[in-house]
Length: 170
Length: 395
Ligand SMILES: [Zn+2]
Ligand SMILES: [Zn+2]
Image 1 (tube, rainbow over the protein chains, first blue to last red):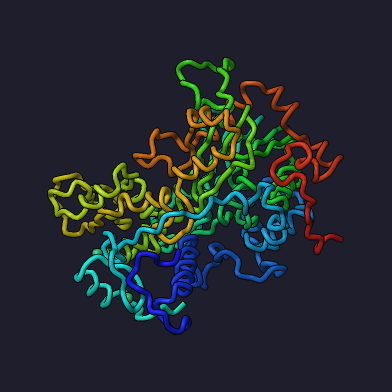
Image 2 (cartoon, rainbow over the protein chains, first blue to last red):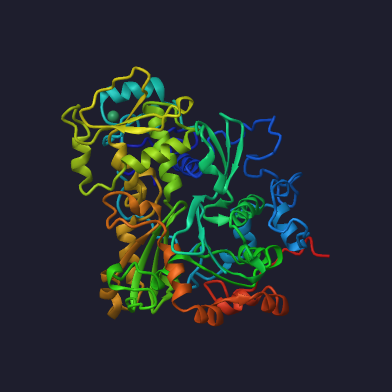
């Protein structure tokens, strides 16, 4: 993931150098995480929602029960039946996938046993292609300040005026 | 009665017969009309500008059971007479579903809903029972030609893309491979590109899904298309112009036909140029956004290389595509996304007694033998692993 086709990277102090490959890798990782979001404005939750729905995807820490369940306020298939303890537990204690994977122990399986982690395809052997961050054409140059690629003088100017973070802040 | 439930992270396909009802596996709140819509109700939502989504699944796995229950409850109540205690249900689950999540599926089926019997499996494992690998006109119901001994199912869905080899109808788990690119990532990537270059679409998932489905394609010659996308209209053969919807006028989004002029000053035009092919390209070159994984073509070769060498030719000859992303033009052959559902339907109707005796677990067995029965009966990649159960709440 480190830039391999870039302008020469200055070898100065890693943490302060804006072109530090580790910083760029972290920025890329953060960006890939953002591409999995269900809503762009996840924290902007309408406070006047009477029905409590669309409440974001559970930011509570593990082991903390939700105050209200949306499914409780909805028509039930068996309206007169009380849910079992197993079901109430599943409804009330939401855990995110990372926690569930950790708790399941599948990460401790030897690599020879097929599982979530061994199923991922191997990394690419070829250097990544770079695209202009402004127009999407081939990005053969990189911004000296933030390392995003651009294709031309026009796009460079555009990048600096509208997009450049001046430094990699992640 | 038999319920078939293909429970995808993006959409649910549910029904009894050949044609399922299809709706999003989501709860959405419309900022326009301030209403909340659950699963099957979503088609009723008119104002789709700025929808807030609550999805039961995270990366394909059900994690929000409160949301999933609300959607399932409403879904079951849509059936005229859901005689659940007398019914069997077949539910699909993601590949490598975690043992403690599988357990909750079982609890819902028997403890919450009280089905008579049940079978749970992955979409790809149903494909040998379907007609994906057989010419439909040659087959009649109850007269199934044998599926090929070896097949490779590419399931490119909302959360990720899996390559799933099957021998004699069974998944070869050690050769199943995953690329972490799915339809959700593609739409979000497209949103970012358009939001920076043209209109702020970051909160317009619904519109951008529509743009993606209408405009995007898998390029056969990426470099050539990239050059073509540099030319100006009217010589640019790539550019498509999409007229953004106006929900206040009840006007859906649509494509401007080539050569058609913008008549109405109120039309807002979104231009799709190199975005048309650079977005689906992520399935084939994930490193284009810095995801350090090989793409689909290489991943297929990688998966096949893990299979017995004398069978390689058979796998190469029997590659089938399922999942929403395989509908992009150029991801040929184009196939309906209900393939897993249809295969399930053929599976249970072609030999109901085989399904009932060999596959389904009954309510009696579940309560008699216990929660572990599904792991023992159906096996799977994690079935030999000790199950870690969260006992915090147990009395
Ligand atoms: Zn450019
Ligand atoms: Zn910059």
